[in-house]
Image 1 (tube, helix red, strand yellow):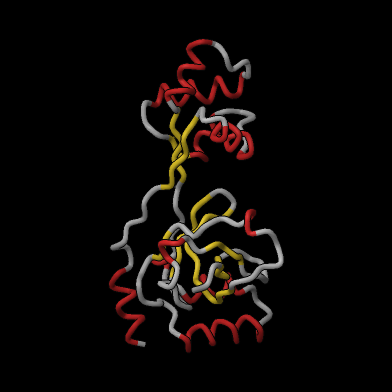
Image 2 (cartoon, one colour):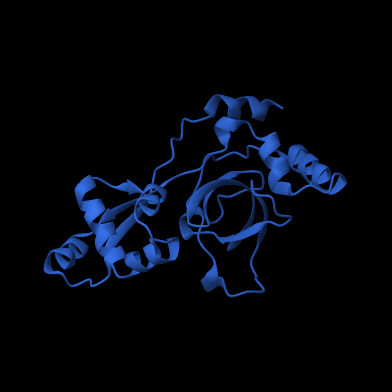
Length: 196
């Protein structure tokens, strides 16, 4: 059972990204499988390409895989070999090659939803925050009455950066959740790919 997985994401870089495999998924992941992983604060779809038990960097800095989207690999070994060959021959980033090989319904980019916590609303009502950006963010979430997309919230509140939003989450003023992925999305395409 491997503790770490290297994932190809559809970003224009010539490397893979390493994620920690949660206990619930250990022993269940295989090469070529679609994984739902965090990347730059947003959930993305990637393909598992390698597994390892050791790392050169601190595993504390690694994020965990959210979930495996299918039990079977979407990219069988011959397609993984083709992806690798195209990437090396044309000197193209593996993520870009994967994006071209993977049908659009299988390339899922998730959303993060932000909502004000009870503690955050109590602090807002008591006037304990003392920060205009935090006040504005919590007021916007309170007015919305439902979770907001983090990008929409950051666009709406001037000065609310991703780092500041993480800080609000650490202080438990807001709660951030990842939108669940629709497991039916692209199911027919996956069945067709298995026949190849």
